[in-house]
Amino acid sequence: MSRLTPILSYLLLGLCTLLCVVPFAYMLSLSLQSDAELMSGLPVLIPEKLQFSNYVAIWERAPFGRFILNSLIIAGGITLLHLIFDPLVGYVFAKLEFPGKKILFGAVLSTLMIPFFIRLIPLYIITAEFGWLNTYPGLIMPFAMSAYGIFLMRQFIAPIPSELLDAARIDGCSEMRIYWQIVLPQVRPALATLALLTFVFQWNEFLWPLVVVSTTEMRPITTGLTLFTQETFTQWNLTSAGGVLLFLPSLALFLFTQRYLVRSVMLAGMK
Image (cartoon, rainbow, N blue to C red; front, side, top):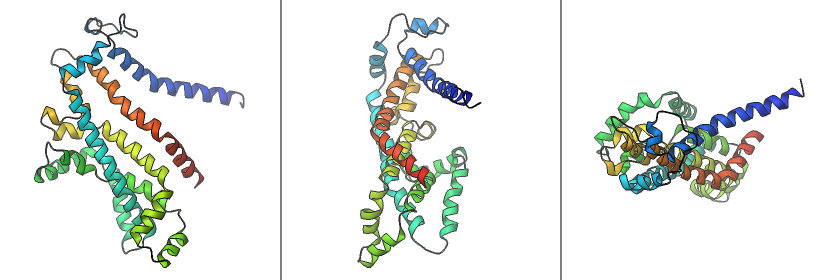
């Protein structure tokens, strides 16, 4: 039984790897296929001739540069707001005492149980009343904070010794100085993890931009790719080429923050 356990573990890991890699490999294959191979109706894994021109065509047939810029502004803006507000609120819940603290924290966590589809219509009405439809504030501000980010930061800030913070208060430090110079430097791995998860999620967000945006110029890359979908024929090769480009920024950010992500997982496991 003990000899079979490593073999079964490797088989399970291999199966999980295939399930993750095969869809991306097929998307890469689709991005290099010609229209004739798509219309043949037969699955093609390796194109007869690699059509790198598809990656040029998506820039010629749609304002792809504007789509990427919009995605960078939206995902980058939301990530920046998360890094500003989530650790601050997490610090308040972790280290400050005030009446109703547990009730408020429970109310924040309870929002995790509400599916986004239920909040979609009220959120749309509020955004419309602010006059933010089809604008960057309308795409960014509804997601300026998240219960998950607040909970994550609270969990990493709570183990910081309160005696250290009390000593700083005795020396005359303000709460903001304690937060900025003592707390934040100790939770850098958690901040990197929060930035990575938030950026990747918002970079791939499709539903909210589809509801709020009404012009082509304001579309992010996710909804911009729908321009290649027609009533009679969907250009899956161009859509897949855009999907490959959509994947690259997330990969670059993961490689940049990988050591912080691993460190945050190790710290979480040691608690």
